[in-house]
Image (cartoon, rainbow, N blue to C red; front, top):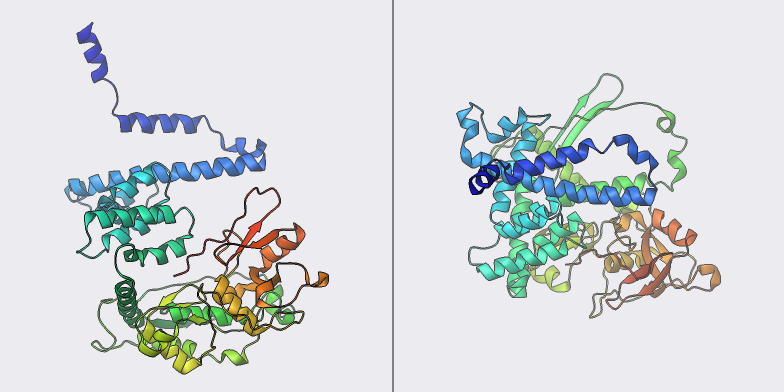
Length: 456
């Protein structure tokens, strides 16, 4: 009996092999056409659950890829890399394989994050952001501090967007370092990053021979935000000047060809010869830095103005990083350079980082009021929305203008056009939360919610 049991146990499949077989069996019993018969609420619930299942499977793929990389099988089989080896597998590509190899290496030093991903609590992008942040901690970081940073970011991932989580991860050392050291460290890091970004700048254009020209560029984030803000100001949906343009009725199809510059990213602008595309790219970035915002058409009252949020000490002494209205963090030196070239719009803040009101009693919010709301709200205040201030409108949240509302900063809040319509159509309720930011309650909600945008 014992011998027979031992033999039977010895024939049991490995947990991983058995698990994969069970997944395959479950999928075999899930016809794709069955989705058509489900209620939309149930479809949403199941899709969200499957997103978590996908994250759990990705965690195993990454762990398996890490083991495969360590085994040296790729070299034994004559492949150039593990990524290339996986590219020969089912519909895979080398880029995807290489990314899994890098993710496996990053998560190796963050086992708790990998376990959270395997449990479906973190997505792959969230886990990679956390792992990279932990790996980049200073060598002087203690194991306890490293674990505290990892746990903090895992908690942040539950409420922040990927962009905000990435920004938060760059400031994670504020968990254990004094604030001046954190500010100086972030500023130094951003300054080095900006220097590398300028060295990577490029611009190119190619006529297609059919009356169109295809081009591509690489720009530093701050200058790209300036360009994006200006383009959106010109092409705002509520401006009717584009409605009758011939291109608005054309049914054409374009193709985008993007190329990236090659070279040593660590080299500076000054110690290597600039190629033609890099010079063009730097020139394009400089043009973007000097766009005449006051001459461009307005957009939701903000025009083509890209706000820079910095305190007075930063302007004078340059020791802390600053923030663009798009959420991009820039070094103190770049902020002071922009202030020098583009001018300064002064704003006075109280002790809780809320701008002091200087509004006027009129139907529409003034440009100055919307700039104040931009600094306070950071963008659309609807829960989960990531629209920047330039995509938002001023909304009378206490009561409608027709019912006696005053157009002051205290009565105004930023909200994007889509959520603005929903707030009116569905009669959303709003209130001022304990942190000084607007909270919303939508029909059917039992709790007040606010946009958990990270505010450095």
